[in-house]
Image 1 (cartoon, rainbow over the protein chains, first blue to last red):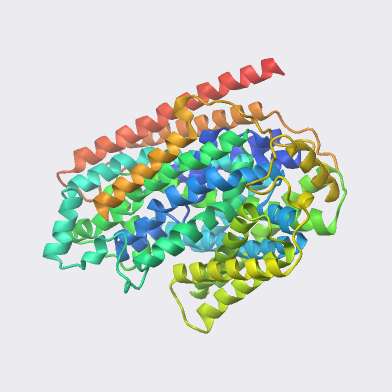
Image 2: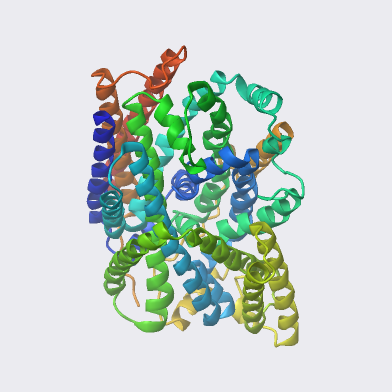
Amino acid sequence: MPSDFIIIGMYLALMFAAGIFFSRNIKSTADYFLAARSAPWFWIMGAVWATNIGFLHGYLAHGGAAYEWGLIQANFEWFQGPFGYVLTGLFFIAFYWRAGVYTVPHFLETRYGPGIRVIYSIGWLIFFIITIAAELYLGGMFLKNILHIPFWPTVFVLAAVVGTYTLLGGLGAAIMMEFVQFIIMMVGTIPLVFILLNMVGGFEGIKDVLLTQWNVSPQYFSVLPDNHHPYGPGPWIILGQCFVVTVGWCAGHQSMVQRNLGARSLYDSKLGYVVAGLPKTLGAFLYIVPMIAAPIIFAKHGIFVEKADAAYGKLILNLLPAGMLGLFIAGLVSAGLSSISGVLNSSSTIVIKDIYERFMVKGKPDHHYFVAGRVATFGIMVAALLLVSVVARSPLIMWLEQTLLAILLGPFMAILILAIFWRRTNTPGSLTGYLVGSAFAIYYQQVLGQMVFFKISWWSFVVALAVTIVASLLTRRPKPEKIEGLTWESDFHARVGDITEQRAQNNGTKVTQMPEIKVTIPPWYLNLKYWATGILLVQLALLLFFG
Amino acid sequence: MEEEKGANPKIIVAVQMTSIGIILVILGLTVFVLSMLSMSGAVPTDNAWTPYIKTCSVISNTGIILLGVAFAIGGVARFKQAKKQE
């Protein structure tokens, strides 16, 4: 369809041009890695939502899983909203701000020392490069299937566009593109969902056809299925998903946290994260519920779907008129590219801030690290491109991604919670706990053959928590001045400036643009507590209705 | 190490808003024009729902254009305000 090609081509050209235009405003590392700490709360909300929705996570993969497994897939949206975003926004994000850091590994070093920073940085860097390669692969396959265009040239064009605007514009450009995606997907999808539900007689109509006429298992409509469900048993969803994976993802994923550190104030950062819980919660209606209705539409029109991942593409291809289809595909491409952009920018931040500046080349002018950031962005994109062919040939890559996540998130949550809520936790304790927890995650999967991701995350969290506590108690307590300002009980309000200044000097850097800690009374409609309560009530209502 | 003096955060947000607005307006108008030209106007699974699907497309597209206009105007206004304060 030529009109769809025109729209997608124009969209890619606009992104490319916007990246170049935006780059004229980028002058320092704070501009490049943290968007000059300029983002208001609604920017954070859109960016955090959009960076989490790509080819790999979101419409295609999550939609495909919903097509295959049913409503259980909504857990990723309904629990991550209230648990991940709200809890992180309320309890964790402020500590990153108070520590005056650019990255999550930097926070871990500030609290625990350099060892944990190196291990955590390398783990996430590997994960990020695999993620970019997988996103490029899925994007290339999606466009190949839907528009019948060759795979490799498509992958190179996608990489060139996203690489250029991220390399030139940094986090600011990434946030900009994420917000475009947020609007297109929200405005473009919601009316379609209503039409789709009307076509199949609403949610009750879907249930009636699938349960009564097709004899589908009632588990297909269960948000928390029983303990024997192979994809995600209910109790483990609550333990592993709610308390470890979603919070760990939101508080430990550099790409997510970096958007918050780019906020114009701490309050904007917290509010942006909490409010992002709402589109995340409602996200289930954009690609989970339509995919549950999709089998009925496909059956009615005799449409054959060979693979679950291709189901969403088939649905829009057969439902939308030309022009709108192009815009929708552009929105999906945008989702993939903004995810790549976010991860790419975060990878270069980790490379420069956590490895290069910290351990390799200290004390150079800011411009040196700014240029190095762009070189790192280019290098990471090349590495990911080289990995695309491996991803294309190996189904193991998805397994590797999940294994890495299980290794990273469980132990991370244990040492993060203890870092903030227990002053007694020390460096040897955290390092031992993290390493033992990670080793246990690998052992549990590889030797004991556990394949349920939530179980691995939960038990690696428990093991890391126990080992950290025991090892900390057996070794010397940390010096009070080392942990001042970083724990829940700390009296940081008066002294945060002195503390961060001292820490920056100890690390061999002097940071002049510290984030402002403003204490202001927001209007009632921007009150954090109201938003958090509202989102929790929405979640409760959804569980009561669908559970 | 001293960080170099960075960009004005207010100008950054203004540029972002304007760029988002321009992108949305251009995209929305392109979709609108191409749909009007009916380069391939029919809904693939043509049925009784076709008029609703087309109406839904028009509503979505209008929403995108209007939001784009709002962002562009807001961005330009913020830019002027930030420049005045500099």
